[in-house]
Every structure is written in C-alpha cells, then in structure tokens.
Length: 302
Image (cartoon, rainbow, N blue to C red; front, top):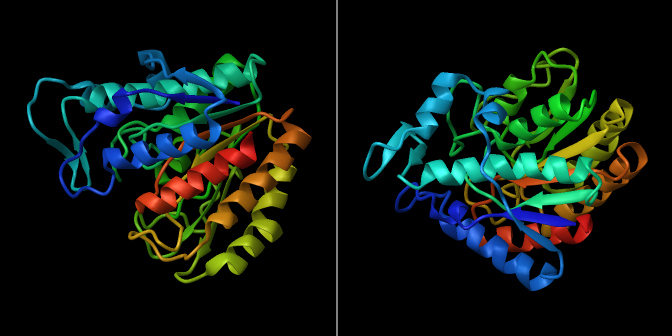
C-alpha cells in the first residue's frame, strides 16, 4: 500500500477557528506513521494544468492559482485561501493523479492520499465547502482518460453530500457516484431522485441514524449497486465527519463503522477491480475521531 502526502498540505491556513485547520492532517499523519510507518510513503507531486482542466473551467483554475494577495482571500463564506493554499491544492489534486497511476500501473493495488484541502464540494466552476479543487474528480477523470477505464466507482461516505463530484460526472456514465449523507445538511443536495445518466446513487440518513441504520443502508442498497456496476477502479471520498464526536454533523457513527465499510468495499474491489482502490481524505473535524478513523480505514485497506 502507498500513502501519498506532502508538507505543503499542512501550510494551507483558512484562518483562526476554521474547522478545516492544519491540525486535521497533522493528527492523521501522526496516527498513520505510528501504526503504518512501514508502508510505502511518497511525496505527492504537483497536479498539471491538464489534469485540472479535465474537470474544472479555466476561470476556476485561474481563481485557485491566484497568488497576488496577502493575508486571507475568501472564495465563499466557508472557503478561504492564504498564499500557501495554491501549493496545497495542487499537491492534493496531484496526489490523486499519482495514486491512480501507481495503482493502474501495478506498483501497488491500493493507495491512500493523506492530503488537504478536501475536494468533493468543489464544482467544475467554483470552490465551496472548504474545497478548492475536486481532488477525487481530478483522479477519476485521469483514470478514464489516461488509463481508458470505462467504469470508475466513486464511493463517498463523508457526512456531507459531495455535490461537486456528482455535478462533474452527472452525465458521464464512465464514473458512477455512490453517496450516503445526512439529510438537511450542507450543501443541501443529494436527493435520491438525482440520478444523472443512471450513474448517481444518493441515500439520505436522518440525524441520529447510528450504526445499525448506516450499515443496513450500505448492505441492502449501496453495496449491491456498486457490485452491479462492476468497477474497474474503486475510489473513496473518505470523510469521517459522520462520527458521533464530530461537531458538524449528527449521524452518530462509531470508528468501527468506517472500518466495516472499508472491509466491504475492499471485497468489492477484489471481486471486480483486481483489488484496486484509491482513497482520499475528505472531512472529519473532531481531531481524536479523525485520528482513530483514518488509522482504522488504512488498517483495513493495507
């Protein structure tokens, strides 16, 4: 298993009291180096313009690449850049591309990208929800275009709907998007009626759902649908903010729920994708929960 990360991802600073703070990645790296220091650790490269342009408009790329400012620059009420954010965003997206290449080239079947800022809210046209570039979308599009894949599954168990990922691939049947997320929560998208070209599946969980309802939903609905898609590559938006300790949501999951779902996804990848999985860190805003869940997730992947 390969872990991609880069020190630049720690320098992205959206400001004091912002939930998406550098300490998030610090605790993830501490836990992974403690428990999985023997894995193949690699520096994430910088994403190329062509990688970004597959999923983002030139105007949006230009907005993220802007460096001629000091202090903080707000892209929306929740999404803030500092002068170091550009480099972090390019490394986070570059990690997705490098991970796809490593997995598809047979270097290792599994890769985890310990990066920030997260990505799944960024649309083709705009940053939002703490996300500058849509890292997993950049990776999935690269998998389709460079490696000629016809079936890439993006599985998103972050508590917030990955509206950006869904929108980017809404009419692209090469990429299927599967998401469970809390109802009535930002970004207020992801209704089950949103089906795209038949390649989108959303499932809502009400606040307080807990482990039983979460596992039943995945076992009965989502996992069979992923199986039926027969992915050639499975990509994971690994957000851990559905944990019971997270301050931004209320699904109330335990660490073991994320480990369980990771095990089940790995079984599907083994059956249909020659074991190939690329996972990227998304949300998770309680530091101790994030530490535990990321370590458990990687433990099930390796």
